[in-house]
Image 1 (spheres, rainbow, N blue to C red):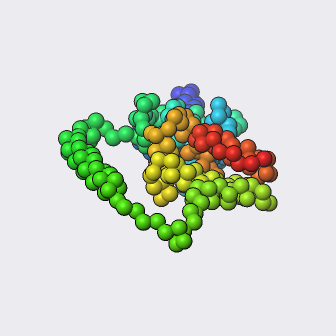
Image 2 (cartoon, rainbow, N blue to C red):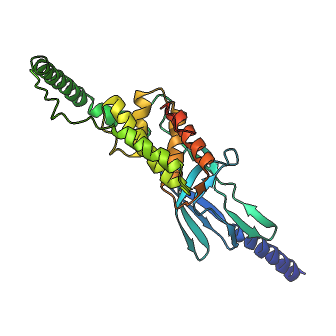
Length: 289
């Protein structure tokens, strides 16, 4: 009788142990990631994976815009490793699905992504910590004062030289004024809107090149060589474009320019997309009907 009880207890223990060991495990590092950090997600178990993200990660609340991106993924014998970067803070779940004896199981692991932004930053990237900033604050103030003084002195010298100059103008040899570079790029953009087919990626490159050239002439700044992130940061600092519009433009430009998408647009769709980008940047340009 004791042997039967022992055998029955041992069988129950083995079944319970097997159930525990068969449950998959999920983890991620670092424990408190920030927006833009690379997060390593690990899943391991005996079950078969049904699905997991390989490119963009979308949220049910915002199905049209990705909230993150899978940088790389690696399958192992009993698991998978994903390297992910999120674009916005909040609590996010990764759409990993696996088969179990009870059917499909969806991951409910919550990744809490934090941000250094407090709402009044003038840059798109996370700001430095107060310790790093205050360490060089004195040197920065001295450098800025020196540069401002030097700039004012040079401006005064140039003003005197301009005021006292005696220009000699020869109408015969005077060159005709060339159209501004932004106008030439606008014509190129308008001509592309009349062509077929219209590719979304080419359209995004032409528009960003035109907008950089136009704002370069408006603010007397060289924005042509700046990245899209630096260009949008400058636009946020010098215009009335909101941070939300800047974030939306950054995601739209990344999706259109730096993915393998070869999507084509009709002329009406392309014109509507250009008008939407123009409205967010507040350029106020007429691209034609």
